[in-house]
Length: 319
Image 1 (cartoon, rainbow, N blue to C red):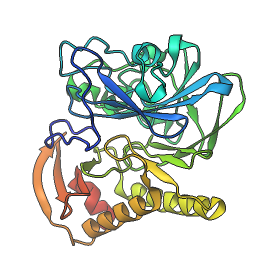
Image 2 (image 1 turned 180 degrees about the vertical axis):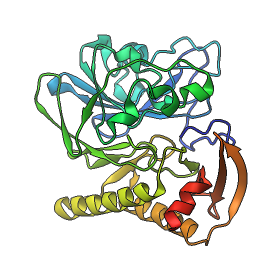
Image 3 (image 1 turned 30 degrees about the vertical axis):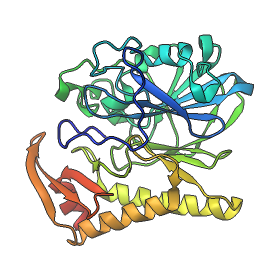
Image 4 (image 1 turned 45 degrees about the vertical axis):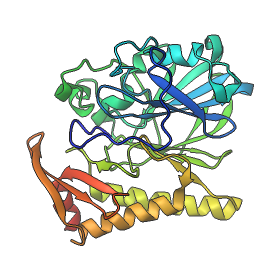
Protein backbone atom coordinates (compact mmCIF):
# COMPACT_ATOMS: atom_id res chain seq x y z
CA UNK A 1 0.00 0.00 0.00
CA UNK A 2 2.82 2.36 0.94
CA UNK A 3 0.67 5.02 2.54
CA UNK A 4 3.68 6.89 4.04
CA UNK A 5 1.53 8.93 6.43
CA UNK A 6 -0.89 9.86 3.63
CA UNK A 7 -4.07 8.80 5.40
CA UNK A 8 -5.07 7.51 8.83
CA UNK A 9 -4.50 3.79 9.23
CA UNK A 10 -7.51 1.56 8.57
CA UNK A 11 -8.00 -1.66 10.53
CA UNK A 12 -9.63 -4.69 8.94
CA UNK A 13 -12.84 -5.83 10.55
CA UNK A 14 -11.49 -9.36 11.06
CA UNK A 15 -8.30 -8.29 12.85
CA UNK A 16 -7.72 -9.97 16.20
CA UNK A 17 -4.94 -8.73 18.46
CA UNK A 18 -3.06 -11.54 20.18
CA UNK A 19 -1.80 -11.36 23.74
CA UNK A 20 0.88 -8.72 24.35
CA UNK A 21 4.58 -9.58 24.20
CA UNK A 22 4.07 -12.45 21.79
CA UNK A 23 4.44 -11.91 18.05
CA UNK A 24 4.32 -9.20 15.42
CA UNK A 25 2.13 -11.51 13.32
CA UNK A 26 -1.17 -13.36 13.49
CA UNK A 27 -2.26 -16.15 11.15
CA UNK A 28 -5.57 -17.71 10.20
CA UNK A 29 -6.58 -20.36 7.71
CA UNK A 30 -7.77 -18.99 4.36
CA UNK A 31 -8.19 -22.28 2.45
CA UNK A 32 -7.38 -25.92 3.20
CA UNK A 33 -3.72 -25.29 2.28
CA UNK A 34 -3.23 -21.52 2.59
CA UNK A 35 -2.94 -19.18 5.57
CA UNK A 36 -3.31 -15.42 5.76
CA UNK A 37 -0.63 -13.86 7.96
CA UNK A 38 -1.19 -10.28 9.07
CA UNK A 39 1.52 -7.99 10.37
CA UNK A 40 -1.11 -6.23 12.39
CA UNK A 41 0.66 -3.34 14.17
CA UNK A 42 3.73 -2.31 12.18
CA UNK A 43 5.36 1.09 12.68
CA UNK A 44 4.53 2.11 9.11
CA UNK A 45 0.75 1.57 9.56
CA UNK A 46 0.73 -0.69 6.48
CA UNK A 47 -0.72 -3.85 8.08
CA UNK A 48 0.36 -5.96 5.12
CA UNK A 49 -1.07 -9.33 4.16
CA UNK A 50 1.39 -12.20 3.79
CA UNK A 51 0.18 -15.50 2.35
CA UNK A 52 1.62 -18.93 3.07
CA UNK A 53 0.65 -21.98 0.98
CA UNK A 54 1.64 -25.33 2.48
CA UNK A 55 2.30 -28.08 -0.07
CA UNK A 56 3.03 -30.90 2.33
CA UNK A 57 3.39 -33.62 -0.30
CA UNK A 58 6.15 -31.62 -2.02
CA UNK A 59 7.83 -30.45 1.21
CA UNK A 60 7.37 -26.88 -0.02
CA UNK A 61 5.90 -23.75 1.53
CA UNK A 62 5.23 -20.84 -0.81
CA UNK A 63 5.29 -17.39 0.79
CA UNK A 64 3.75 -14.44 -1.05
CA UNK A 65 5.43 -11.25 0.21
CA UNK A 66 7.39 -10.87 3.43
CA UNK A 67 5.88 -7.77 5.00
CA UNK A 68 7.46 -4.99 7.03
CA UNK A 69 10.19 -7.00 8.71
CA UNK A 70 8.47 -7.32 12.07
CA UNK A 71 8.93 -3.66 12.94
CA UNK A 72 6.13 -3.59 15.47
CA UNK A 73 4.73 -0.53 17.23
CA UNK A 74 4.82 -2.61 20.41
CA UNK A 75 8.41 -2.56 21.74
CA UNK A 76 7.68 -5.59 23.93
CA UNK A 77 6.82 -7.93 21.08
CA UNK A 78 9.11 -10.95 21.35
CA UNK A 79 8.88 -12.57 17.91
CA UNK A 80 9.70 -10.05 15.21
CA UNK A 81 11.13 -12.25 12.46
CA UNK A 82 8.66 -13.71 9.97
CA UNK A 83 10.74 -16.86 9.55
CA UNK A 84 10.85 -17.47 13.30
CA UNK A 85 7.08 -17.01 13.42
CA UNK A 86 6.57 -19.53 10.62
CA UNK A 87 8.83 -22.13 12.21
CA UNK A 88 8.10 -21.78 15.93
CA UNK A 89 4.71 -20.23 16.68
CA UNK A 90 1.75 -22.58 17.02
CA UNK A 91 -1.29 -21.56 14.97
CA UNK A 92 -4.74 -22.42 16.28
CA UNK A 93 -6.10 -22.98 12.76
CA UNK A 94 -3.23 -25.40 12.10
CA UNK A 95 -3.94 -27.72 15.00
CA UNK A 96 -1.71 -25.66 17.27
CA UNK A 97 1.38 -26.40 15.17
CA UNK A 98 3.68 -23.87 13.46
CA UNK A 99 3.09 -23.48 9.73
CA UNK A 100 6.58 -24.74 8.93
CA UNK A 101 7.59 -26.45 12.14
CA UNK A 102 11.34 -26.59 12.50
CA UNK A 103 11.77 -25.32 8.93
CA UNK A 104 11.29 -28.83 7.52
CA UNK A 105 9.66 -27.56 4.32
CA UNK A 106 11.70 -25.56 1.83
CA UNK A 107 10.63 -22.01 1.07
CA UNK A 108 9.76 -20.43 -2.24
CA UNK A 109 9.29 -16.66 -1.91
CA UNK A 110 7.17 -14.73 -4.41
CA UNK A 111 7.26 -10.92 -4.23
CA UNK A 112 4.16 -9.18 -5.58
CA UNK A 113 6.30 -6.06 -6.10
CA UNK A 114 9.30 -4.33 -4.59
CA UNK A 115 7.75 -1.80 -2.20
CA UNK A 116 9.25 -1.87 1.27
CA UNK A 117 6.16 -3.19 3.06
CA UNK A 118 6.35 -6.35 0.95
CA UNK A 119 10.12 -7.04 1.04
CA UNK A 120 11.58 -5.98 4.39
CA UNK A 121 11.87 -9.56 5.68
CA UNK A 122 13.15 -11.05 2.41
CA UNK A 123 16.74 -11.35 3.66
CA UNK A 124 15.54 -13.91 6.21
CA UNK A 125 15.01 -16.23 3.22
CA UNK A 126 18.35 -15.71 1.48
CA UNK A 127 18.78 -19.49 1.27
CA UNK A 128 15.55 -19.84 -0.70
CA UNK A 129 14.34 -19.25 -4.25
CA UNK A 130 12.92 -15.73 -4.60
CA UNK A 131 10.68 -15.02 -7.59
CA UNK A 132 9.71 -11.62 -9.00
CA UNK A 133 8.19 -10.26 -12.19
CA UNK A 134 10.36 -10.20 -15.29
CA UNK A 135 8.17 -7.55 -16.95
CA UNK A 136 10.61 -4.70 -16.28
CA UNK A 137 14.07 -5.95 -15.26
CA UNK A 138 15.47 -2.41 -15.25
CA UNK A 139 12.97 -1.41 -12.58
CA UNK A 140 14.42 -4.03 -10.23
CA UNK A 141 18.09 -3.26 -10.81
CA UNK A 142 19.87 -3.17 -7.41
CA UNK A 143 21.05 0.40 -8.05
CA UNK A 144 17.43 1.54 -8.49
CA UNK A 145 15.85 -0.50 -5.71
CA UNK A 146 16.40 2.05 -2.90
CA UNK A 147 14.23 4.55 -4.78
CA UNK A 148 11.71 2.15 -6.30
CA UNK A 149 11.19 0.29 -3.02
CA UNK A 150 10.59 3.65 -1.26
CA UNK A 151 13.21 2.66 1.32
CA UNK A 152 15.31 5.72 0.46
CA UNK A 153 12.35 8.02 1.04
CA UNK A 154 11.77 6.45 4.46
CA UNK A 155 15.44 6.57 5.35
CA UNK A 156 15.64 2.83 5.98
CA UNK A 157 18.07 0.21 4.73
CA UNK A 158 17.09 -1.45 1.46
CA UNK A 159 17.09 -5.24 1.64
CA UNK A 160 19.64 -7.02 -0.51
CA UNK A 161 18.32 -9.95 -2.53
CA UNK A 162 18.73 -11.49 -5.96
CA UNK A 163 15.36 -12.58 -7.35
CA UNK A 164 14.77 -14.90 -10.26
CA UNK A 165 12.72 -12.86 -12.75
CA UNK A 166 9.95 -14.94 -14.30
CA UNK A 167 7.84 -14.65 -17.44
CA UNK A 168 4.12 -14.01 -17.68
CA UNK A 169 2.08 -17.17 -16.88
CA UNK A 170 5.07 -18.80 -15.23
CA UNK A 171 4.19 -22.06 -13.48
CA UNK A 172 5.94 -22.35 -10.14
CA UNK A 173 7.84 -25.56 -9.47
CA UNK A 174 8.43 -27.05 -6.04
CA UNK A 175 11.85 -27.14 -4.45
CA UNK A 176 12.50 -30.52 -6.13
CA UNK A 177 11.23 -29.47 -9.56
CA UNK A 178 7.67 -30.78 -9.44
CA UNK A 179 4.74 -28.75 -10.78
CA UNK A 180 2.56 -26.84 -8.32
CA UNK A 181 -0.87 -25.30 -8.84
CA UNK A 182 0.63 -21.79 -8.73
CA UNK A 183 0.86 -19.52 -11.79
CA UNK A 184 2.50 -16.09 -11.81
CA UNK A 185 1.08 -13.36 -14.05
CA UNK A 186 2.53 -9.97 -14.96
CA UNK A 187 0.10 -7.26 -13.82
CA UNK A 188 1.84 -3.88 -14.25
CA UNK A 189 0.10 -0.71 -13.14
CA UNK A 190 0.67 -0.08 -9.45
CA UNK A 191 4.33 -0.57 -10.30
CA UNK A 192 5.99 -2.00 -13.42
CA UNK A 193 7.02 -5.11 -11.46
CA UNK A 194 3.59 -5.84 -9.95
CA UNK A 195 2.51 -9.46 -10.35
CA UNK A 196 -0.48 -11.63 -9.48
CA UNK A 197 -0.54 -15.24 -8.35
CA UNK A 198 -3.26 -17.74 -9.24
CA UNK A 199 -3.78 -20.98 -7.34
CA UNK A 200 -5.62 -23.20 -9.80
CA UNK A 201 -6.37 -25.91 -7.25
CA UNK A 202 -8.17 -23.62 -4.86
CA UNK A 203 -9.40 -20.95 -7.31
CA UNK A 204 -7.67 -18.16 -5.40
CA UNK A 205 -6.27 -15.04 -7.06
CA UNK A 206 -3.67 -12.94 -5.22
CA UNK A 207 -3.16 -9.44 -6.60
CA UNK A 208 -0.75 -7.65 -4.27
CA UNK A 209 -1.34 -3.89 -4.36
CA UNK A 210 -3.17 -3.81 -7.69
CA UNK A 211 -6.37 -3.18 -5.74
CA UNK A 212 -8.01 -3.54 -2.35
CA UNK A 213 -11.10 -2.23 -0.57
CA UNK A 214 -11.61 0.15 2.36
CA UNK A 215 -8.26 1.91 2.03
CA UNK A 216 -6.79 4.10 -0.71
CA UNK A 217 -5.38 2.34 -3.75
CA UNK A 218 -2.04 4.14 -4.01
CA UNK A 219 -0.02 4.66 -7.17
CA UNK A 220 3.57 5.84 -6.77
CA UNK A 221 5.08 8.17 -9.36
CA UNK A 222 6.44 5.09 -11.15
CA UNK A 223 2.93 3.67 -11.63
CA UNK A 224 0.57 3.90 -14.59
CA UNK A 225 -3.23 4.01 -14.57
CA UNK A 226 -3.15 3.20 -18.30
CA UNK A 227 -1.28 -0.05 -17.62
CA UNK A 228 -3.49 -0.70 -14.60
CA UNK A 229 -6.68 -0.52 -16.67
CA UNK A 230 -5.24 -3.02 -19.16
CA UNK A 231 -4.26 -5.30 -16.27
CA UNK A 232 -7.74 -5.13 -14.76
CA UNK A 233 -9.33 -6.00 -18.11
CA UNK A 234 -6.99 -8.97 -18.46
CA UNK A 235 -7.75 -10.17 -14.92
CA UNK A 236 -11.50 -9.84 -15.50
CA UNK A 237 -11.17 -11.92 -18.66
CA UNK A 238 -8.95 -14.47 -16.92
CA UNK A 239 -11.30 -14.87 -13.95
CA UNK A 240 -14.32 -15.13 -16.25
CA UNK A 241 -12.63 -17.90 -18.22
CA UNK A 242 -11.67 -19.79 -15.06
CA UNK A 243 -15.18 -19.60 -13.66
CA UNK A 244 -16.70 -20.74 -16.97
CA UNK A 245 -14.33 -23.69 -17.23
CA UNK A 246 -14.57 -24.83 -13.63
CA UNK A 247 -18.05 -23.75 -12.57
CA UNK A 248 -16.76 -22.31 -9.28
CA UNK A 249 -16.22 -18.79 -7.98
CA UNK A 250 -12.68 -17.41 -8.01
CA UNK A 251 -11.82 -15.45 -4.87
CA UNK A 252 -9.50 -12.44 -4.73
CA UNK A 253 -6.90 -11.61 -2.09
CA UNK A 254 -4.88 -8.40 -1.87
CA UNK A 255 -1.74 -7.17 -0.16
CA UNK A 256 -3.89 -5.19 2.28
CA UNK A 257 -7.45 -5.29 3.58
CA UNK A 258 -9.19 -7.54 1.02
CA UNK A 259 -9.19 -11.34 1.35
CA UNK A 260 -11.35 -14.19 0.03
CA UNK A 261 -13.85 -11.95 -1.77
CA UNK A 262 -15.56 -12.82 -5.10
CA UNK A 263 -12.94 -11.82 -7.63
CA UNK A 264 -15.15 -10.86 -10.55
CA UNK A 265 -17.30 -8.54 -8.47
CA UNK A 266 -14.33 -6.81 -6.82
CA UNK A 267 -12.49 -6.39 -10.12
CA UNK A 268 -15.46 -4.94 -11.98
CA UNK A 269 -16.41 -2.64 -9.07
CA UNK A 270 -12.85 -1.32 -8.79
CA UNK A 271 -12.71 -0.69 -12.54
CA UNK A 272 -16.03 1.17 -12.41
CA UNK A 273 -14.67 3.44 -9.66
CA UNK A 274 -11.54 4.19 -11.68
CA UNK A 275 -13.64 4.95 -14.76
CA UNK A 276 -15.67 7.39 -12.67
CA UNK A 277 -12.43 9.13 -11.67
CA UNK A 278 -11.21 9.36 -15.26
CA UNK A 279 -14.57 10.63 -16.54
CA UNK A 280 -14.75 13.36 -13.90
CA UNK A 281 -17.59 11.77 -11.95
CA UNK A 282 -15.49 11.73 -8.80
CA UNK A 283 -14.19 15.00 -7.38
CA UNK A 284 -10.72 15.52 -5.92
CA UNK A 285 -11.02 15.32 -2.13
CA UNK A 286 -7.46 16.33 -1.21
CA UNK A 287 -4.44 17.78 -2.95
CA UNK A 288 -0.80 17.96 -1.78
CA UNK A 289 2.79 17.53 -2.98
CA UNK A 290 4.51 14.17 -2.58
CA UNK A 291 7.88 13.08 -4.01
CA UNK A 292 7.97 16.33 -5.96
CA UNK A 293 4.60 15.81 -7.70
CA UNK A 294 1.11 17.21 -7.27
CA UNK A 295 -0.81 14.37 -5.63
CA UNK A 296 -4.57 13.94 -5.44
CA UNK A 297 -7.04 11.79 -3.53
CA UNK A 298 -10.45 10.58 -4.70
CA UNK A 299 -12.89 8.78 -2.42
CA UNK A 300 -16.07 6.98 -3.37
CA UNK A 301 -19.25 7.55 -1.37
CA UNK A 302 -19.27 4.83 1.25
CA UNK A 303 -15.46 4.73 1.07
CA UNK A 304 -15.26 1.22 -0.36
CA UNK A 305 -12.82 2.46 -2.99
CA UNK A 306 -10.47 5.42 -2.93
CA UNK A 307 -7.40 6.48 -4.86
CA UNK A 308 -4.20 8.38 -4.14
CA UNK A 309 -1.82 9.10 -7.01
CA UNK A 310 0.15 11.81 -8.78
CA UNK A 311 -2.37 13.93 -10.70
CA UNK A 312 -0.17 13.42 -13.76
CA UNK A 313 -1.26 9.75 -13.92
CA UNK A 314 -4.92 10.74 -14.09
CA UNK A 315 -4.25 13.34 -16.79
CA UNK A 316 -2.28 10.81 -18.87
CA UNK A 317 -5.03 8.22 -18.58
CA UNK A 318 -7.74 10.71 -19.55
CA UNK A 319 -5.90 11.45 -22.78
